[in-house]
Length: 538
Image 1 (tube, one colour):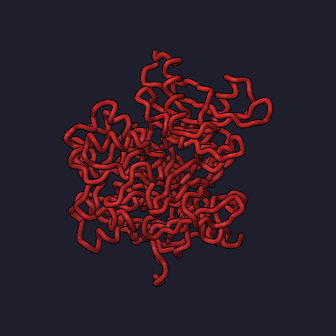
Image 2 (cartoon, rainbow, N blue to C red):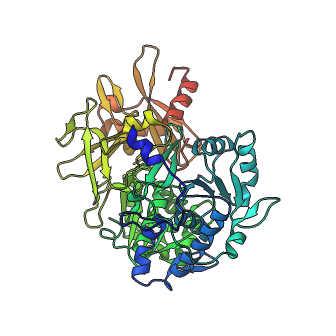
Image 3 (cartoon, helix red, strand yellow):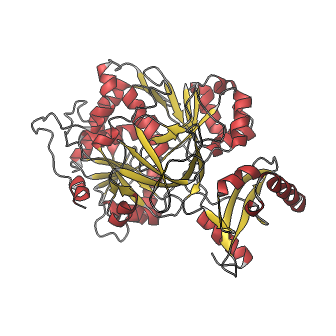
């Protein structure tokens, strides 16, 4: 895999090297529109405490870049970030890019074990942390052969230096390090629904057209304010309210702290975003707590959803309350941006949407054949300029899903006659019952139409005869509901809308669903829970 080795070969690139036409810098790419259109005095970041302009952002990023360099960080060195959604996150991320380093934003709810793995796996030179993560970082670094430089984003604790203080004494001007387009720009670690951690590597070329649909399709540009309820370390948020927003010259609203419906509603009321990004779980929470009817939500131009399938019930209720549809879509850490989504003029309840500009998609059968007919499920493959080049140090997993410029998403879709794509399941979640394929998503969608059900997930568990039997895991709206009565109502609903072999006969009641940090249900954990409760194998 020579291409992968060459792409990963970073080096010591000083900022005084002769400028070559084909060499570029990630921060320069992102700030290009702001510079060309003279947006220096225009807001780029809104927080509860301050408003940051594009001129401020450029100056502070230069200072942070020089402070990082003074700590010994060089081009293509990895810099891990455990920093909440504050301006300092932007300064550090762009500052690292300016000196050619590779920023890696990490899950703010990461465990010490997971952090230790990423520190060792990435061979990072430094980790920038909010001081709330000092003890976590200490624990993760214990026993490591080569611990990284640890620096606080703001504040001082013991011998840990403060990056903000170091940057304050640096110049606001910095000549950006120029690198080849296939040099590393940024990484994102994905843990997905299987729990396997992989470092997805994105190169400089992959961030050139991050605004390819947010501008032309959703109308985002200078003067617009956009907001994402998800934290910046998520690909959904990083791609849109960091990379694409800067690339388009728009402004971003930031929220510090873990999101809750009440906190998100407060941000919306205070800052009045033009476009909002969120996940179905949050939209559901805003509805159930009555916030969706607030005046702030009535002025939002577009609501965009990704991260998990958007239930029809949530779509319908949101549309009825706000008068504006939620435009569902899907993306991945490996694609950086969404690849399929609903358009403002052609949205379809229940559909994930149609391919976005700059993206090619295709469905493939188990034997690798391309599926051209409508109505036949297949695994979705994606090709776009923002595709990662692979997983760091995981050549087998890279080879399995990155092939000839295409990426296998592992998601099963069906395309209808109108070209709309409908999500079915992960390819390893599709179930064969009585010799016929079953989509858990179809069953879940049917069950969620019941007002008594808050969340639902269908799984398959092998019985003693080696046959797959369906089980329905659910969370009820009322924890004291008459389960026998509810089960009868749900069975009637399913048998009236689904084929008989698609109707689970076993119900498992839960207090909460096991989910990833991005809100995706971990069905492999549900299968283990079901096996423990029923005494059957997984």
